[in-house]
Image: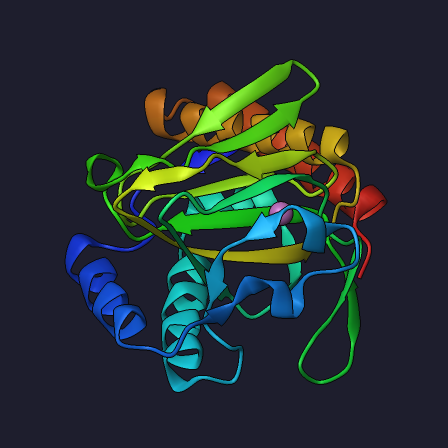
Length: 229
Ligand code: NI
């Protein structure tokens, strides 16, 4: 499942983060690329230990913790510290697949189930820079407003189209979900959304209430069956 989550950061918050990032130190993105990615990766990144990366990373993680759509869709177990990249002057990141296992700052290794890209520049500020994700149903092109984020399976092949004018500024990071399977996670997400719609949209009659409670029970029992921690 590919899901766009609007307004993860409010406009003011997003602008403040962007300013901090623009003033940060940037290095060649190949510094963190694996052997395969090295050949297709051409961008700039903020080093992980830079104060701006720490600060903005914390802002993003705090916002996500209280974002119901993100929590429902990702069912996160561990989230890697957000990283930051920048593309301009024709820079691009050719088709690649993200590493399946990554190391947290404390040395723990996590499996990358979901990839996240959060945009800091408005789409009209730069030409190109679409994130192209190859899904089971074909390729999807993603270019979002500042503060919005896309969540997609880390198993998918993806690329960033050349940025031919202006600057694309994003945060990117990975997470391990309690639900490894994208298919099961998508089912749980659909079910959760349907339950929320029922709870919010129907008159509170005893029968409706009972059925909603029953469905909520099924949701949690499926989660109990499938969750890994
Ligand atoms: Ni990638």
